[in-house]
Length: 433
Image (cartoon, rainbow, N blue to C red; front, side):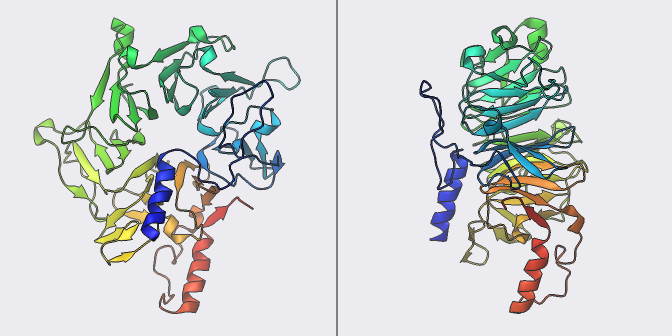
């Protein structure tokens, strides 16, 4: 039964659809027939608690404020006042779920929605002036699709949007205005795009753009070729067996230049600097004692569960969400095959330091096994979105004996288990209340 519940939960997660029991159609104007039926109405414009529903992405801006892309809309958290402001309600924006976030080099905040395009918040706009603090770009303005799943600003300053209808590029050097048809460049199947369903974008050190899709794997795009020849050439990137990655949800280039891809079949590390004569690796890396060596095989496969989110912190550690992982013979997943018993762990947050995989959310009492966007704050704490809002992993307790499994609690004794769990829960801050 637990396996069935886990699979149902995972299906909801994969589909991008909400899992809240509270699904209230948004209240649009009488003349507006478009609405997001899964937008979750909130009664509070300003409150002391954060979102209580799916939070897909998080960022901390240059001024220290946090932005949350949630099913309740766009929410901003002021770390000084400790107040959460629902920007969607405050600004009277259409009630659509927020999905993706970016702070550009100028300090503007971009928010992609599921159905109403993308908003750009110009935080430098003077209060009381005629200049709008935000602009909404939709397909009427040249955006290729109104559901924006990911946003990236490249080294040249251009802003790229991955949507359900293809890729769109905004030329940031153009004048900031609402007449945007001339400043958007669309990349669709007609322009040789290999898939129209774009879930994540990353740029590597060479300026090549990497795109992941849910249905057509991973592909690359070299903007320099467009500048020199005018051609828009996209190249499919496949796994070691020459097969497209299945349901690829996330991609990043780490500080050493390696490309990490999260997909349904696990976590793949591609090393473009590998000795091509060595050929691809077929080994599955699951042991914490195994280090990613610079002997440099082209591909190394880590773990085998569905990996949905990958994030690199300031120290180079990787944080990711997965449904299962095999560590030292212990199989963590919806069903524990190693011990022939059921587990109901769902998706969990892990940290990988290059040697050891550490399961983070197993230590908490969050009762929430879905992890979405991850963000490191200026103090090193890790924030992450869940099905029920936002949580923070307080790394000041990272070396606490209970977190290191070196405490004196006897986990066979009920009272010790209670005290142990109480200590573990102090590592997390939940913002629902």
